[in-house]
Image (cartoon, rainbow, N blue to C red):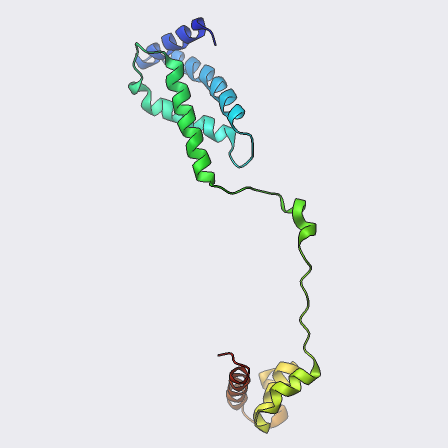
Length: 178
C-alpha cells in the first residue's frame, strides 16, 4: 500500500464521516479487500472463517468510525481493529482442532458384543424364589411380555410387575449393584 493509497483512504473516510454515502461505500469496498487479505494470511488452520472476521471488522469500523482521529493515518487504525477481531475469533474457537471423522474412522475399534452364557444366567436366577425366577426368566430371558407372562403363570399383570421388580432388585443386590 502506497502513501497515495493511504491518502485516498483517509480522504474517503473523512468524506464518509461528513455524510458522503458514495465515499463511504467506496471506502468500505476498498478496505474489505485489504482486511480480507490480511485475515487470510493470518489464518493457517481451519476453525475460523476469514469472511466472518472481515464482516465483524467492517461492522466494528462502521460503529466506531467516529473514534478515528482525522489527523492520523487510517490504515493502522483499520488493521488494529482487524487484528482484534481476529483475536476474538481465535478465542471463540478455543484450543480445539476440528478433524473430519472420515480421516480417523478406521482408528476406532469395533464395539464388542457382550455375551452372557447360560451358566451366568442360571447363576443369577438361582438365588430367587421360584415365582420370581419364573417371572424374571420369562420376561428377561425368553422375551415375553408382561401380559403373556401373566397369562402363562395364571396371575395378574400387577403381580408379574411386582415379582419382576423384586427379582431384578435381588439380582442386582446379589451382584453388588444398587
